[in-house]
Amino acid sequence: MSEPIIALDNITVSFKQKKRTITAVNNVSVHIERGDVYGIVGYSGAGKSTLVRVINLLQEPTSGSVVVNGTTFFKHDANTNDKIRIKNNDLRLRRQKIGMIFQHFNLLNERTVTENVAFALEHSKLSSKEKAQKVADLLALVDLSDRADNYPSQLSGGQKQRVAIARALANDPEILISDEATSALDPKTTNQILALLKSLNQKLGLTVVLITHEMQAVKEIANKVAVMQDGEIIERGSLLEIFAQPKEQLTREFIETATNIDKAIETVGHQPIVHNLAENAVFVRLSYVGKTTDQPLITRLFRDFNVTANILYGNIEVLQGTPVGSLLVILQGTPQAITNAIAALNDNEVDVEKIKGGQSL
Amino acid sequence: MSTWFEQNFPNVVYQGWSGDTGWWTAITQTIYMTFWSALFGGLLGLIFGLGLVITSPSGIAPNKTLFWIFDKVVSLFRAIPFIILLAFIAPFTKLIVGTQIGTTASLVPLSLGVFPFYARQVQVALTEVNAGIVEAAQSIGASFWDIVFGVYLREGRSELIRVSTVTLISLIGLTAMAGAIGAGGLGNMAIAYGYNRYATDTTVLATLLVLILVLAVQIIGDVLARRLSHK
Image 1: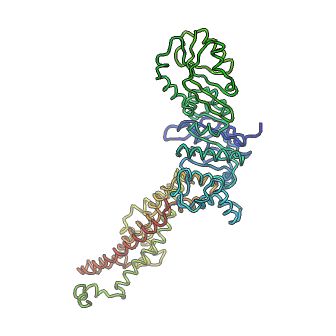
Image 2: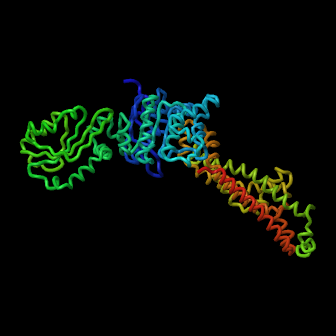
Image 3: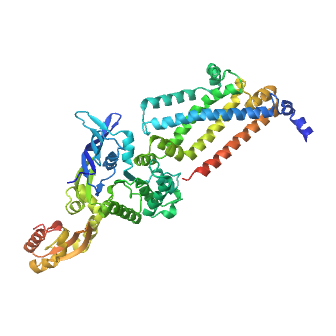
């Protein structure tokens, strides 16, 4: 494994409040590889914002070590009390290589779009002519050339976020941290911004750290996911692993918000066919990943086991090129036949979860 | 016309235009006091206001000791009634300008009287600059001074002009009291030559002139603040 571009080890961040100490991040380690789009998901208050702020030391951890691109930013061992912290001037230079975008855009209101982007180049060694060219290029990249002389108040939310992205990219960063950057945007604009981030990741090899409470956003562009709760990472893995085999309850909840399967179960559950489920029937959810989808499984159930499958709802996502599906199905047949059918499905790596009926199985 | 004026405003005419107690002299004294103490007091207030924001726990360079000093100095000077301050710091005034009476001598207490007020106003104005913008600036590697000048002062510009207008108007009010140490001005005209001598016409005209001055400051301030805001 190559050296990670971001290595956070045993990070703890706690805040002292009058008499009690609040631990926002509790002994978390994350390694992010170059070129990753790393999604960190969690509800608000889970500590994800605090955790990513540690990367560029906007938030200094209480203990742990922060190494970005081989440079130690911070290291504090709670046991030995040894502390290393990068010098402020060095940190400023390093920060230029770590772009960051925010939920509320945080543009300079009293500067035009051009001036906002140029503000990031104040310490650049480029000549003023080169800077102007660079700003123009960046605005072209985010498709805002025609808005160069507007003030932020004259732009829509999506446009503001694109200005923020151009500003974050001004010093050719290797890392882009997105702190709930799409949470204040409508779904269509969200998708545009996510598509832009994805293309930056592919075109420039930019490593993206994406924190969000919207699983939808992660699903669109991340290749790795970590789920945070109460200051800890409770589950992590590739996008596919997380989506296909979520282990924790919270992870499932998040995935369900992205796939709408929970809503579907509720809606379908009210249909007479499920509500008054026949005695020899069972209402199940079939989940599968990858190549299984290429086989005519449902047809086989009838042919081989004499079990009918009535599909009430289906959802298939293609994540990183791999299909991930969920079907809500009523299986009907003799108890033995259904048991055999379920065993056959399991053999084909289809996960079967009984939702209603089938007590006798 | 001029006879009518002489008949109805005898004391105004008696004061004359230029001489030591003349109207023009009083006007220039008030403007002189306002201008210079606004400059010195304003600068001092801006430094203290910035200091309060920067060193506060949520500032870009939190420092408990410095914050405590800024905070207490400002509170202390704000607590002293101006008319007492005039007398109280007389020895210090003498040390700086060589005399403790007169128009120039009044600049010291005026500056010291107005700076804590302005410092608080600046503090409020700059606290309104969105913390997220400051954080965004830090995240792109902006330096301390980039943030002070490029973010705080630039983003708070319009609000600073608004509070400066308020401060300037209250400063004009303070100059009226400076007559107590022989600084002259329109306030002194209204009290010493108007009220004390039962010369109501003088009081009325002096008041009118102060009003015009205040109004001019207010209008210019409002226009500037509006022009410079892009929020």
